[in-house]
Image (cartoon, rainbow, N blue to C red):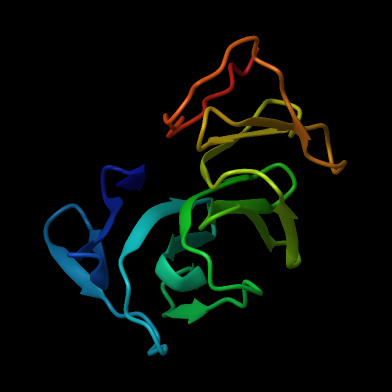
Length: 174
């Protein structure tokens, strides 16, 4: 679930990993929003937006953007890895999605497409801080950090998280 306001709310999901959907609440009623046909109709896992655009990501590398009141358009992600989370920063317009299968995938969806494939476990969380540095988390306790537009670096958190996964990351704006 993601909301721009009490009258502009989105919910996403799927049924048993398939039949991905996007619902929109306008303050009075829920309405299903269609997604472009693709070769896979896998689940949609996350939604994020800014003042002008809404992004959703999901199974099989699927990513879509909706500009204003228009229809969702498919975005090229350059891969088939499941994308589990999406977020962005209104200051620069950068939008990141993370996921993966056997290894991590970081996909920059805006302002241009960029992929970072790392020899690390899949990722499940991504966030920006107040100066647009980014952090990502995932399988086996993976924690990554990126300053500005530089390379992603693994962070040594000082302990091992065997068989566990960090599902989300939040960065204190201060």
